[in-house]
Image (cartoon, rainbow, N blue to C red; front, top):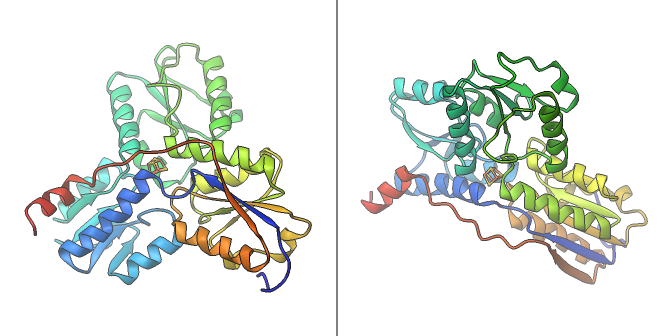
Length: 322
Ligand code: SF4
């Protein structure tokens, strides 16, 4: 941990855009509104978004985080996280008479719809994603008999399909844009007839934060990414920064900055994953100000204005004033 009142970088450059995306903002607001409308407890299946700070703050207000819907007492309210759930989870919740609110990001839902459509049309679907990630589990559950998972371009050579002329691909929303392009190229080489809804399903927020961190990395000696270790898009930001010439580390908050990282650093870049609140960025900037940074500015690469409506269960309850 960093001691105070010692020297540090003279310049701090903040990536823009950074931090909360529209899907995370909606999911966090969903739990907050559910608590306002119904009072505690409100159960949440899995971390609502992959950020420890957010989960801790919501837990203080009365949210109870569980791993599975089977842990929720019958008849209680449960919110499904931004990463999405499979139809089997909806069914299990219905059989326990749970009152459900689905905070799945609409951009994840879009991929679920694609998976169902390709499966119904008889395609083998190659999903590019990370094994064990909740989003991949939820999407795979839409068509478990039709989806094969691929994590690297290397793995493409081992992919086997029923009919090479009926193959489609979909992707997790929070992957590395460049790495995914390599995997897609390998798939196209192996299955020339492969189809998709468009080039990939990587969402606007993931894409924009990677564009911003590439630019940031070129101008900084060190890039610090605020995000939790289980946040896919945050981990990708560290990788992209390193690939573009800067040292880079993932931290939950300012207390995790290590003194040795700052040795010889004149310009430090800061960005944050799509599930990391801005107050954590402000605390990190404050740390560097205390250590003598006098030049703090923002490097804006893309403007964002995406917003999503709250889930219909919340909108309906707000409309009737319950
Ligand atoms: S990172 Fe993208 S897909 Fe995930 S919640 Fe945010 S907008 Fe939705």
